[in-house]
Length: 88
Figure 1: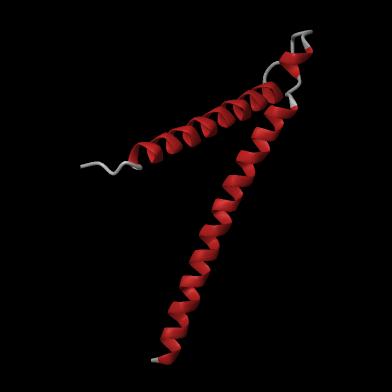
Figure 2: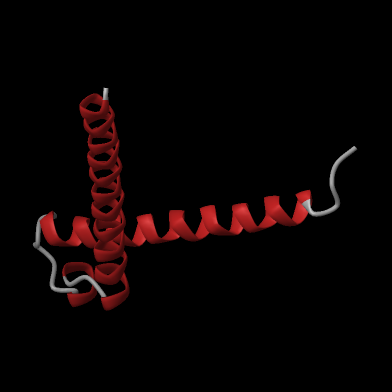
């Protein structure tokens, strides 16, 4: 039998996933505008919006944070292993 909070958890997870996908799409649109051919006179097609730039920076910061946390966890595990090796 399913827990009554399970649908709420699924709904929250779906909303977060959708929000992340929308941010990724805005970041992609930003990159596309920055590196795409600029043979248009429409400023909106050439210049990324603040929302798009914010999405791009957010994704870069999240990835950087994820990598920092990975290095930190690895460093901590190495310290523990080294201290156990010295204690033996």
